Length: 332
Image (tube, rainbow, N blue to C red; front, top):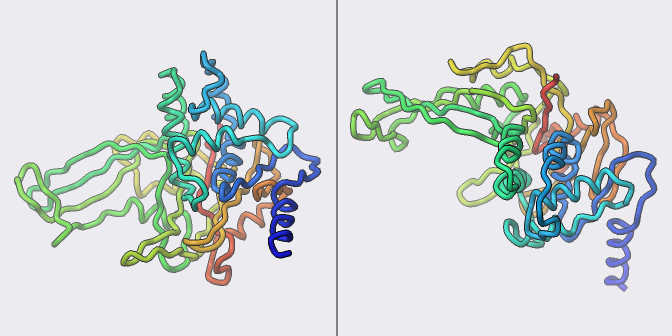
């Protein structure tokens, strides 16, 4: 009897079509595929990505191992009327070459895998660069020797901005300031200086060079303490819109940002639970609409900005939904 009701509950929750009067498509949960589901909802709201993929006309339209092709197919299907949108081909494509089946996944890691494979496997260098430019954050890492004052400068690019969370209340701006804060590296953290030809006390900092049209912010809620993983539930308040002035702490000499550029939040990938037992959902605002939608696998419903704010976190919401990835779009 227990097995019967378990199977019945799975059918009712994940496989039964749900009537909808709006254009956001749900996605079935194929045994722990909620992470991919939440990311696909976010990508579906990133209309610029499908616009790039639609410029590509591969000779083999049946390649089951090509990530950008399968991503293009599912994003197009999610714009259609089928419910829930079929996406097993995309999921199997990832399983073949990038992720393990039926395991807990990290949304930021899968986000990077999807974009990296899309960039590598699209047989058009111009379009590959367009995908990269859509998400790529350019920073410069500077390591300065405190002995000879020599500074090593290393360019770097990121698909998401990884922001550490303090074990107290946080704001997005405070987390950004911490990311760009100058750090001193002494004792066991000394860095080898090419000029001094030995390890020296040093400074380390990152400087912002440029921001992309789509900015993904990774709130690093998972931490490893002496080999034991744990999740930080601390509050991180983030705005629905912001100006690039909040990046003033990280501006470099090469930075070409204008302080009056603005970004608007349009997708939030949410994690609920613990490090060993969790679930991903997403809030999205498709087609630059004002209305928010909440997507929990095959279940989709209208939502509000107040609901999104409910993912800020805080220990009163322990084990509740906490924002993990924030996707902002630069306003034109």
